[in-house]
Length: 171
Ligand SMILES: *[C@@H]1O[C@H](CO)[C@@H](O)[C@H](O)[C@H]1NC(C)=O
Ligand SMILES: *[C@@H]1O[C@H](CO)[C@@H](O)[C@H](O)[C@H]1NC(C)=O
Ligand SMILES: *[C@@H]1O[C@H](CO)[C@@H](O)[C@H](O)[C@H]1NC(C)=O
Ligand SMILES: *[C@@H]1O[C@H](CO)[C@@H](O)[C@H](O)[C@H]1NC(C)=O
Ligand SMILES: *[C@@H]1O[C@H](CO)[C@@H](O)[C@H](O)[C@H]1NC(C)=O
Image (cartoon, rainbow, N blue to C red; front, top):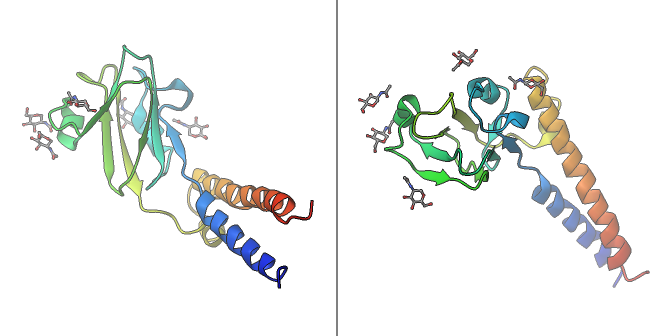
């Protein structure tokens, strides 16, 4: 009786972890160039796929630059009249909570082209279902899905083994 509960509990924990760890990505603006003048952030954005729940992060010299989330008119004009948020820590993590287009600029003039717009998509299907169904999407998308598979399979397995080892009472 006491043993028969184990496999069920283990399976439930395992399933829970699969969902809990299906990963959000942190998109570092400009990759290793960060948030600086003279970088074409349209090219950077085109090279990434953004999903709801992902983070976008800005890394820059604090006190020199900052980040405003603005609306489309502001983005085009490099103004902040319609600002909805601003950050200035030098290492800002912003969660992309909605499936829509986001606009960020460095005020007041988008100095040296410091503006970026990203289109956030609703969540992709689970990796196991999509890994084979998306062969004709971009290389990054395929890579992303495989790294999700890795996270989804590897992390829960380790946790599962540790849990069994220490939690089974059979040490
Ligand atoms: C950035 O690159 C895109 C795509 O090649 C181009 O259309 C755009 O004009 C460039 N922007 C700047 C500011 O150079
Ligand atoms: C796009 O991504 C590829 C692979 O990560 C990278 O080699 C390339 O430099 C990136 N291009 C831009 C414009 O960020
Ligand atoms: C720039 O802002 C002005 C108002 O100051 C507005 O009339 C105009 O439409 C804006 N330009 C763009 C491209 O959005
Ligand atoms: C952006 O915000 C400004 C100021 O509130 C407003 O005048 C403008 O119409 C807004 N633009 C868009 C596209 O919502
Ligand atoms: C910047 O954000 C703070 C809150 O985080 C807000 O109080 C302030 O008004 C914002 N500044 C501008 C210019 O929008």
